[in-house]
Image 1: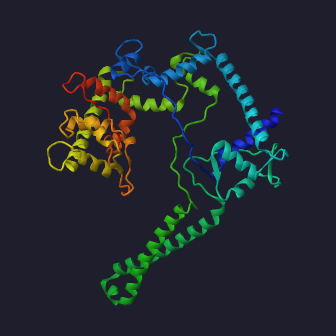
Image 2: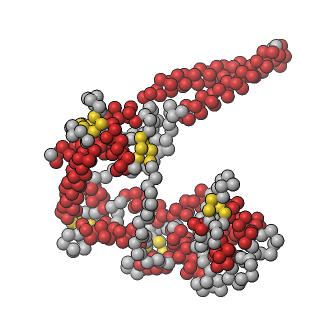
Image 3: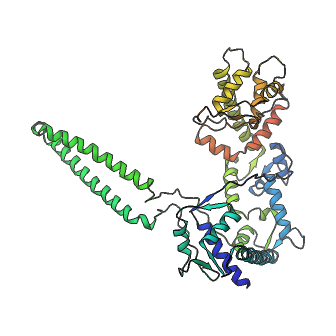
Length: 467
């Protein structure tokens, strides 16, 4: 019975994850999972915590500790593997943990998919009909099917009896190589026809262009001897053919007869055993916590790239000077961009040039930039940010308003159509975007708080608000 339930589970699992013919319905009253209570660190504190040997330099192994939330999560995971609590995860402990997890997973899946047949196999024939599968998707996954779901369902019904029996088997499709052409069988004939048309048009265009060029190269007299009607026909035909080529090429991709997909990063899929061997740097069949942090290959590669951004002299270490220099360079760009952003706000909406934004000016700004209009309590909200009670928000007051703007207290302005997205305060080009990915915003904001604490404006926020 256990194997039967597992077989059913595998079938339904493949059926669900393979379906491209299902639409999602919104989950009502969805609540966010609260974050763990992790202390907020300044860059200085991050560096000191990660510098285990206190030499004012970070090795890559130490650098993997800089992200405190990830470090905490992996430490909890490490403690689960470390059965004898000796501070090391041996190969035996690692394998035993995976064996227990696999056994628990099989049992859970057996119960889960057994429950599915118990709840939705209404006629107890040990088969799930198309309507029964639709009920599963609607009740368990809050999904509804598209009109062509019946065609998709029939692909899994191998014996064409109108139901998915418990002994059904389906091999999971082999994963395509990233970046290859995504071909659909139903579109192959259309694709071949369109490609043939494009080739014929291309060859014809080339021949006509070569003929014209040859005539020009021979002599001017040849050109003048050509009938003007023929010249007009040739030029017009060339333009039409070129336009036809562009239309065909666009249609090929737009119709998805050919779907060009950008290649993903090439990461080999590792078994648990391969992960252990790769992370075991000294090959002692035991993992320290520093080695354990190497288990997740995508994270390690991401941190390796980030590490290279800090290591200016490429000596394999991040000195305190390199660490601070990187952060201050980013903060300089960040401050300049932020100053430009607020300057633009006042230039656009401070209509009387008094360097203050009145309630009406703020209302206009929110309407133009966010397509929102004030709620019933806007007057109270505005007054709470007007610290000196002069009826206007100066630059310091508006910066606080911008940081803490209670957008949930505004309502959509249905009279306005959404405009183009406003430029971000943070990234204006690809280089800056890459830099932002290596210096986390949390780190920069923490650095701001540390830097501003000693200045005369230490009581003003320096966190960024996305627009």
